[in-house]
Image (cartoon, rainbow, N blue to C red; front, side, top):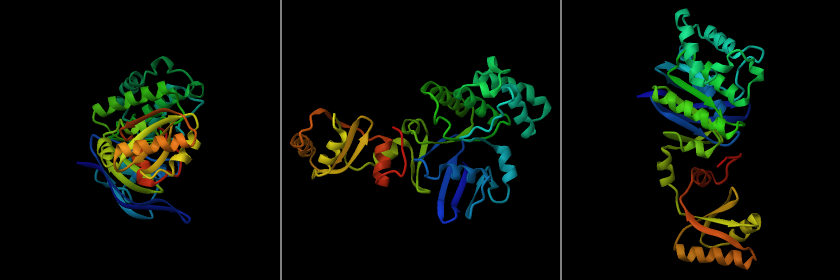
Amino acid sequence: MSLLSIRELTRKFGTTVAVDHLTLDVEEGEIFGLIGPDGAGKTTTMRLMLGILKADSGDGSVGGFSLSRESESISSLTGYVSQTFSLYGELTVEENLALFADLYSVPEQDRLPRLKRLMQFSRLDPFRDRMVKNLSGGMRQKLALSCALIHTPKLLLLDEPTTGVDPLSRRDLWKLLFDLWQEGVTIIVSTPYMDEAERCIRVGFLNQGKLIAVGRPDELRSRFRGTIFEILVDQRFAAKEALARAEHKTDVNLFGECLHVTVEGDLESAEAELRSSLEQAGIMIRMLRRVDPTMEDVFFQLTGKPDGELVG
């Protein structure tokens, strides 16, 4: 059953089309990843999903409530963690939670049990009296998540919640998200991190405001055309230029410290040609091997090149 359903949502800012005729269903009980580079339209899409921002055309619903006509009803069903974390630095952890309980009109008899549970859930109880301005980025992130959960929403939306935080905080946040998912909360999370896409039940690739592919990570990888050779050399940019002239290749991309070269046709001939192209250019090969396509490879193939940075 679809908890969120949107049809042909479009939003422009002046002459710029931020979201372009977007259609999507998110099922109850999913973790859905909205994947794309900076400027792809992820934040605008989330604000449209919440009814915070009005669409120029198209409509949708959350829990049966219309985005265009019943945004107040939708707010009681949804929790939202924005990129900027809407917290109050001069208040303590506990005071922020109490304030959000007021904003969401949480019944008086439910407040203390919920605050206690969220403190334990986020492991912030030892810091309950600390001012938010003195918290680390990871702690502020956990508090923002707890504030978004104070009214027990059915749908939780998080806009790039792990951008700019350390790897340990990223891991902790995803553990909390999986705990919520096991409790029945439906989650939509946007991210530029491809390893996080792998943790979602389904993902949607967003590029220039358009949803260009939707599916399970394994489904999207299975659609990849060709075979990838991963190559490690000392001169990546010179190697990329040399390989661009190879007959068998269809694409060459930088991938961390390596190159990912997509080839079609006979693989033995393709590998021999890649080696020959690099040797003729005087580039020493440290490693050359076949690898399975990553989510980043799939995105690159679908878009040609992303209009921003994706993180592997």
